[in-house]
Every structure is written in C-alpha cells, then in structure tokens.
Length: 243
Image (tube, rainbow, N blue to C red):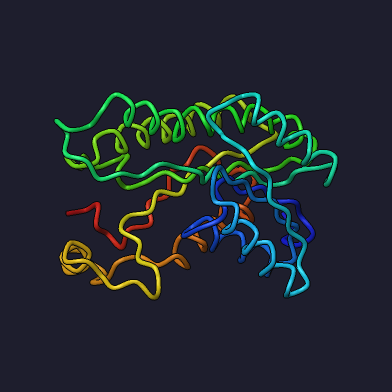
C-alpha cells in the first residue's frame, strides 16, 4: 500500500498511543479522522496540531459501545472523505483494580469498549475497506497474553480482542487484512516513571519500557506491509512477555 494520501480512522485518537498514531499518520501525508467519547478539548488539540503542519484532520464524537453512535460517525466520515483505507481500533478502557474489587459496571464498561467497540466499528467500516482493499489494525495488549491479577477485566477484554482479530482476518480475507499490535509497558515523555514501571524496565530483556514510537512503528508496519500478512498479533514489549 502506497503510504500517503490515504484516509485513516483512529478510534480514541486523542491521547497517549492514539494521539501518537494520529500525528504520525498526518506526518506521512495521510488524511486523519479520530474519534473521542468525552475528551473534546484533547480532540480539538490533536486536530489543530495536525492542521498547523499543513495536514488534514477531523474529530468525530463517538461512543464505540453504541451502534447508533458508530453509525452516525461513519455517516459523517463517508460525507467528508468518501473512502477509508485504514481503520485503527485504539479506543480502550484501562483500569487497575484488584480482582475481588472489580465491580460489574467496571467489567461491563471494559468489555463493551475493548471488544464490542472494535467489533461494531469494524463491521461498519468493512464496506469502505473492501472497496479500498484496506487494513484493520487492532490495539491489543501484552495483558491479553499474560494474566495480570490487578487487571483481570482488562486482560480478559484484550484476550478476546486478539481472538476477534483472528476471526475477522478469516472473515474479511482475501480483500481486507486484519492484524493486531499488542504493546507491553509503554511510557510517555514528561511523566515520571512509577516504581512499578522501573521494576518492569529492569525485568525486560531489552532493559527498558516501550515508547509510543515503538507502538507507532508496529502500527505503520501493518498498515504498509504486504496484504498477504493477516491474522497476526505482534507483541511490542521488549521481550517482557518472555519472563
């Protein structure tokens, strides 16, 4: 896939990894659409950052848990862009809660956002993606592979998303490639490392935690690699999952 002038949709593209992906896509000359649920100010900031460098970006309100909201968002995207080349399912809920303290509401919100969301968005996007012979890239997690006792609901949701990636890859072949990037511990500049973060960096074979750029590079790989590569879950963790 030629890597510029494409239309890229990033759910939850206002902060952290989502923001980094959006800015990177714009730097490559792609047209960027991001979604947000409540982070209006952050969404406007990302759009303005991209426009300030001559890029093209829009932000749509969208609750990925709700089909009606997803449909409204896609109606606007089709009107604004007429096409879609890459869908990046990034919107997610992440919480640290001891297993016995997870509430039903926390469980439901996490599973609805992290699994139902990508399913609804991908299902709504596939018509456009089949036309463009596009890509779907889901953002999973090392937590979908390793059991973290203070993140059981998150781990369960990401494990489900990994399997959903495989099922979607079979369902949407041979026209649309579907893959997943599963980051480990990721640190962001300007934020002091926590004690846990420092411990994980020491345990990691590569002797550091991941960066947003590490994740962005993996996403860009799946967006530009041969269409023949599909149904893959790429762990980006510096070897932490080997421990």
